[in-house]
Length: 434
Ligand SMILES: Cc1ncc(COP(=O)(O)O)c(C=O)c1O
Image 1: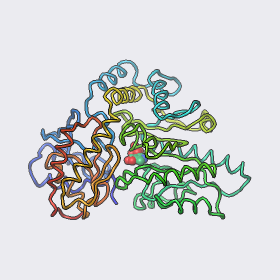
Image 2: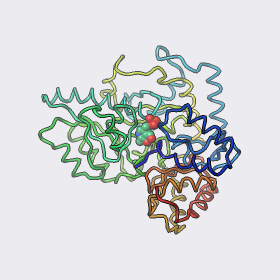
Image 3: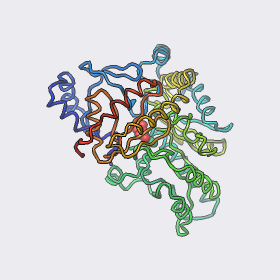
Image 4: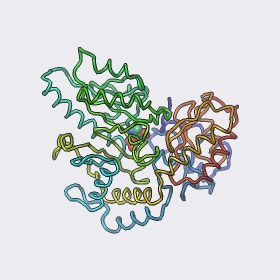
């Protein structure tokens, strides 16, 4: 299965042979000369954006249904975001964690409020989703060590992750990331992280029950497995895992890096009504939180858990940087003022309903939550479909050989959803397989 960062090679070659994108091609050659080849050749060189639209360096316009991989939640160049970032840049872009700033404090308060986390909950800021998960896993390790002492066992505590889960590329987050092709080359990684089949509560029970092994310190999971092809976990399963964690004193870490900040039709996916009030012990966030400014982090629920981190336990130079915090506060403000959480729910519903109604013979299934959606194709031709859509003015991405991911900015309008559906409805069914 391919993920967000290794899907691009085909189209640059197409661009090179079409002769249509001269400035684009010249810059891509320069890119390839100097960039580490971890992302493949980019599809286009983009120049600027506005709302849901973006333009490449040759002036071609695209409707962006990827949004920088679910990052540009309020679209490109929102005036309130620009104003807030410019004002903070003029004031103080960075101060280090020897000092605090107003935006950082306000943002932590706001995130705790939005997550509905109890009094005594605390926020750790990092700069990416992987860093949020690193912090969560480090807290789980401290918790596991304490649990072992309390249970009086000398067996190592364990952390359970799910098959098809994706948590990032740093060593800790990668240890909990399932896809063998990206994980195995870096083994040995963090020990005692086990993978259990997603959506199989009996497998989860069996993992907890493994008598010869030590206690489970934490389960880490996404509620919609984004990189695996936008696979929502069953509500019963999620509730069952929560109950098991409660019963066995394990933490539940919910990775909301992709699903959080309104994308799935609630501020966090764990707040969706169909889950009936499941709460995490730790929630991680990133991507959409700062509208394009690199930021991520985690919230630990309650004082007791939060107190496992003390001065020196963890940190990062840029953590809680005021420029990022100002960008995040502006982004959250726009999401609130413009009702974008509700918009994600309504436009997502429209997108799925209209895509299903197209009867495109290439479509196997349309699935998702809010504005995190996927079209499952009947054949593994998703990369050709991405190229075709791009040529027709629409940006989508292939998160598996047969899955197209659609994650437009939350500001997407009814008309823009219609336009995307018209393009996608015309995807030819004779596209070449990957
Ligand atoms: C669910 C999830 N967790 C973690 C990450 C890693 O985030 P980042 O790429 O910002 O490190 C991603 C990235 O796609 C993700 O989707």
